[in-house]
Every structure is written in structure tokens, then in C-alpha cells.
Image 1 (tube, rainbow, N blue to C red):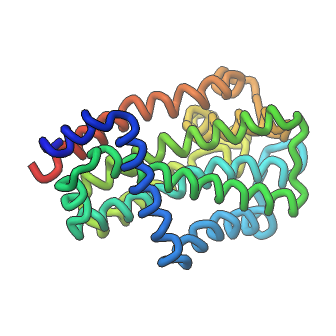
Image 2 (image 1 turned 120 degrees about the horizontal axis):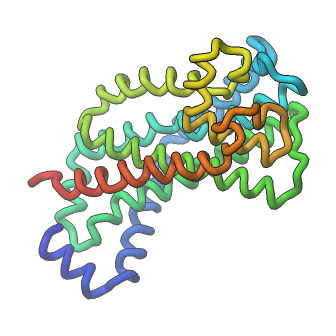
Image 3 (image 1 turned 45 degrees about the vertical axis):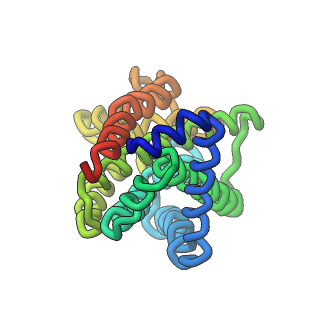
Length: 271
């Protein structure tokens, strides 16, 4: 952190930090107005996957109960992971254009850049959840355990998203160039599909089902299904029976690793 930045942070305290972070958040939100197509595509793509797997491919293999009610919670979890590339692209573009270096030279709290990026990303994630739940409701999906359980499920989904966000921020600063985002995109898909989003682990070979059940995305999807009262929740294994616990522990563990790595990497930029 520069001497000017440190002095500003010390004088203004939390108030300066919040003001600077809000400024950076508004900057990210302003990009939505200038690039509406990118925002719309980000919201529509998960909807296309939901419709495709619900009507064309057919999800829910090995599940007793309504296929749509099994598929929608899984797609909500998958949506929280698929925004990783847009976060990485935004950070790498700012790095490539020298925008972050200019911000670091200004009298502002250094961490506000990362806070603004993460806040805007979480707002977009809330919008994505709203769109997906609305489409799911139109397809016939329902939750059955009341509003408190539904809010807890949405909280677990956003917790997973927050952890994935900081993984993306760290990897973006490691990659440094927008072209490297494609390599991460190739890795996100196998991790996403190696889960119980589209099929129950019981329908898979034993070894594969065990791997799938311990996927962080599977933990969140199973916990969300339990909270919504949808089929495909606990299946008898320890991971499935304690899905709500794992749905908290996995994101917290990922945050414990990647949040400090991202902050440290950001602090070392331009040194």
C-alpha cells in the first residue's frame, strides 16, 4: 500500500474504506449499462442449460420424484460456479489496461478495488438467482419447507458463489491476461459436471459416486434440495447426510485459502 493510501485509510478509517469500496462498486455497475449484452448473456446462459437438461437431455437420472424439482436446485448451485470466468475476465482486463495500477496510485483504500469487484459480482449473482428461481417456478418447481428454509438455501448458494468469486480473483491476478481465462473455462466444466447437479450419485459407479458426493458443488446442491424439500437430498452416505455442514465448511475452507492469497497477490502488484 502506498504512503498516500495508508494515510487516507488511517485518517478516514472504516468510513473512507466504505466510501472507496462503494465508488469501485458503482464503477463495476456502470459497466452493466455500457455492456448490457454481456450481462444478459450471463443471465440467460444458465436458463438455457436448465431448459436443455429438463426437456432435451433429461436430468435426474437415478432419482425418485419429479425431475424438475431435482434439477432446479442443482442448476442454482451450478450457476453460482459458472460466473467464475466473467470475474476473471474483468480483473484481467483491468490489469492489462493498467487500470488497477492507476487506482493504486490514487488516495484511496487499496482493498476497495477488490471489494468493489466482489460486491458487484454478488449483486449480479443475486440477479441470476432471481431469474433462475423465476424460470424454475414457471417450469413447475416449488419449495415445500417454508420461507425460512428457502432463505437458508439461498444463503448457502451465495456463500458458494462468494468462495468461487475469490478463487476467480486470485486466478485472474495469477494469469494476468484475458487469454488465460480460456484455460480456466476448460477446467470449470468438468468440475461442474462432476457433481450431483444432473444425476444422483447412486446411479453412478461406486468410486465415481463417492467422488461426486464430496464435490463442494454437490454438497451445496444436496443441502439446497433438503432445505427446499425437493427430491435427491440425503442418500445414506456421510457426505449426503451432513450436506448442510459441508455446504458451509467447503466454501469457508476455500475462502480461508484463496481470500488471503488474492489479497497478498494484489498487494504485490507493480512492486
